[in-house]
Length: 399
Image (cartoon, rainbow, N blue to C red; front, side, top):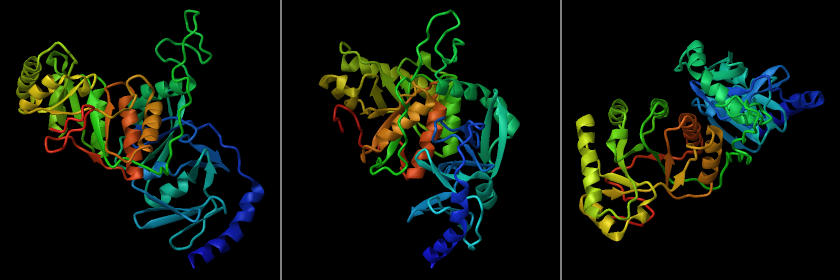
């Protein structure tokens, strides 16, 4: 019966829609924000204006608790007992009560775009358009986010950097989009290679992702912790064994919010196993003073495979478990958009557990937010590293 209704609605709506033609997308709105997070900027995330209506990829609503499913070319979005069914090919949309609407979905840039006003109205969400840092931002919220004014004040720098990165303008030296720097030289453009398209229907996906953060906490770590809290995920923070590099209050917050504290050794082939254990012991003493806990989770900056058998034996005999990242997000050197897209692409190439290494860079929180949303859409669970788990490392050391 449902297919019959679809055919009837298609006959009523499709001809009119196709006769008008699909307007070319406008770029008056250049960024999309979900609650307090700015989405990575690419052709598949920017809003479009079609026939006087604002459209966004349907995945924007997936990040706000709206479930999405597709069958026979029809996209169904559902939340709070309400459903909207879109057929981009046939040009119709109707709800669970078979009421039809005049704003259908469109397929563009490899994804399905849905009307913001209709979806927000149906699913109890809100949207606004803001002028921030000279750019226009479409913001979709579920009521749990900060006010528009607070958002604009907090995100102006991030928005400016996002735009500059997208245009290939290094934001730190005032160079222009053609690569000419202020001192008359030629500045290298970051991320010269194209950012890959994110596959929203991958054939493979990780069985689980263990989020880890490598390096000393810094001014960017608070935003990382905020993002983890917003997404309801926990992670392991590998702190450098030289505790003088730590920020005490941030280390306390990491522990207080339920994340795993771990230690990161520098690779030193000349150090004895006992010397490495002594470094970890001193770091653990500092950790206990700050947080009341110690850790037995450890990694090596260049990978545990660089340790000798004698070094590994000494660490394991002292009760330590050796872990390595199996994938680096690339957030330390690249933009958030690139880190997100390339990591999501790598996710689609495996069905094994992934230990994902992120850092504490300016791009990390934004990349993490996008990756977390992608994991939610794909049903990829996250895990927390603990002593109870069999370690994953490049030395194949499972003790």
